Amino acid sequence: MNFSSEHPKIVVVGSCSLDLVLYTDKIPLCNETVMANHSENFFGGKGANQAVGTARLGASVYFIGCVGFDPLGQQIMRNLVTENVNVGFVYETDQESTGIAYVTSCNGDFSIVVDPAANKMLTTKQINDAEKYIHSSELVLLQLEIPMEVVEYAVKKAKKLGKMVGLYASPGKKLNEEILDQVDFIIAKSNELSIIFGEDKREEILKKYFNKLFVRDETNSTIYFDGTEMKYFRNENESMVYKMGMGDAFTSGFAVALCHQNTIEDCVKFGNIVSSKVSTGKGAQSALPYLKDLI
View 1 (tube, rainbow, N blue to C red):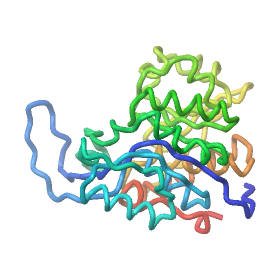
View 2 (cartoon, one colour; view 1 turned 45 degrees about the vertical axis):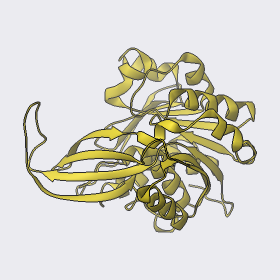
View 3 (cartoon, rainbow, N blue to C red; view 1 turned 180 degrees about the vertical axis):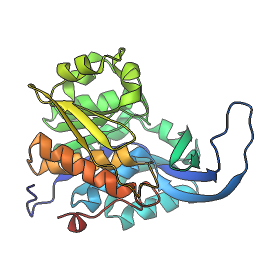
């Protein structure tokens, strides 16, 4: 693995929220009520997770997002600043409250309902406002917890400026061919391929997007096609206690390694290592590792 002394410049466009985690003895079924043993709050949102993840791995990070004009939004902003993320383009709105993810967790498994709230208020204007920072970046990272028109606009803007673009296609949504062709890498969950691509023939999809599509599952395994053969890497930690945020952690590790001009295989391996570290702690952000602890 190669990590130079340079700090790659990354712009993350995405969501930020609070994760309210309820720990139970079982995941409730339809029309069933269960009692929580206890609850915890963590900073989250796929965009904020990736902003913090890449910053801890040594990148210089600008985050474009939206929070409510409320105390929780202020807490999220302060946390991002503490994590060395530039929040000059995190906007505040009085039209929606700050987003919240409601999580039910049982023995490492979980179900999630997200109220995007302020994240829905992100607009293409905010992408334009940050154009000079996108222009000076090496990579733009996106996810799908913000309006799709903003995702598509940000991809086109970044490619027009000649930048690499990475997309963590989660939560799974149908993506048009133009976006799939323009992005430089796509990370997807194995159980959402049919939603994203309109079909679930994994090998055919992987072969179409060789060295570009990386499919992951809850065991922290990643599979991709390198143009010749299927490549498969797995880093399942025996002490895995928290599976939330593993995809964001992988994306952060892969992105930073790619900015340092490592091979695709090494980028995948590094992403898996970062994701494995997150699974041993609590909180999608708090357990993210620092580069100094990995090399």
